[in-house]
Length: 207
Image (cartoon, rainbow, N blue to C red; front, side):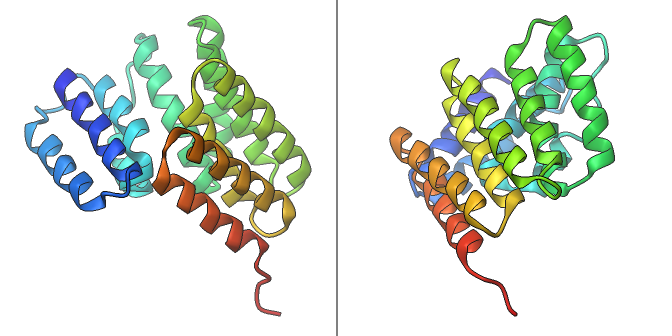
């Protein structure tokens, strides 16, 4: 499974390098080599790595098995990926429960990054009622993540916030910030996606 996780990292690298066909071939190899899921913790790690490439529905499939409650590492990895998926699904009830769970696990397991992702998710809940508050929370949480080495995840969450906020300058600002962060780390596919989100957020809809 360690080798499979390494291949998953290669899939993401190929995707971000604008080589989607090679990324798809590497993904096929990963799925061929992956043993039956006996240790679900690897599925959660792979789900977070590959969400940008495989999309939401396959990510949901990787998260379908609930992690054991006594395994803090599995629960941390599960919640890191589940929070953004629930936010993008706009499943506010399930998201609220997951935020509370994540904050409890982050405190008990001394996992501050999970706590910041929960803070981001709480901001995502506010996008409909207060996009300015959602923007402020997204920036604060992703700044904390980036300051502690989670640059790629921070940029992905900024992009997710831009998509959630949608039309108007606030979503456009976050999309452009995410694009600049992706450019800085050579994540070309995500940078292009972020700039596409900027275009969508700043283009008026039908009257």
